[in-house]
Length: 266
Image (cartoon, rainbow, N blue to C red; front, side, top):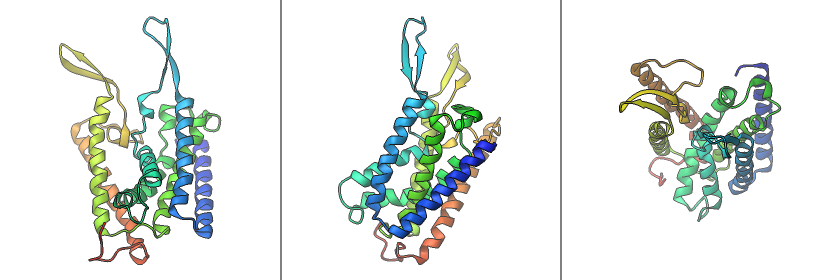
C-alpha cells in the first residue's frame, strides 16, 4: 500500500474511469446495456479471483490435498455484494422504470459504488492479505481488484447520469438504513468465520478473523486495543458514510433524476 506500484495502479484506474465515463456520456447507452457489460465484468472478476486465489491445502495427515479458498475472498465485502445487485437489476423481472425493487437496489448502488470502490482502490487490502507489492503487475488478483473497482465507480456514477433512477432525500434515508443494517450483520459474519481458541470453555484467543466491511480492523493498520477504541472507530465509519453519501446527493437536486417532494414514490 502506498508504494510506487500502488500509485501506478491508482493512475491506471483513474484513467480508465475517466475514459469510461467520457465514452458513456458520448454514446448514452441505456442503463440496461451498461448493466449487461457490468454483469460480464463481474462474472470474469469472480472467476479470476477464485481460480487465482484457490490453494491446494494438505489434510492433517498429509495424505490428500484439498482445494481451498480462504474466507477473506468470500463475496461479502460491500463491493462484492454489488455483484448480486448488478445481476438482479439486469436479469430480474420487470424493467428498471417499473420495478420498485430495482429502483431501490440502484438507489443503494449509486452512492455505495461511487464512495466504496474508491476506498478499495486507495486502500487495497490485497497487499496485506493476498499478494506482495512486488506481485502488483504479475498476479491476476491485482488486475481483478483494480479493474473491478474501477468498473463499479463507472457504474455508480452512470446510474444518476442515465436519468432512469429517481432519487430524493427519502431514498437517502433508506440507503443509509440498509447500509448500516448490512454493516451490523457483518459483525455476526466476521465472528462466525473467526478461528478462535477456547480453554476450559473460556475464549482465550482469536487466531484469525475476517474483516468484511472493515468493521473489525482499520484498513490502515491502526490497532484497536480497547472496546472503546473500537466503538470510536465504528462511529467514525458511520459518520464518514453519512457525510460522503450526503455530499453525493447534493448535486442530484438539480438533475432530472431528482424526485421533488410530494412526488417521491420510491
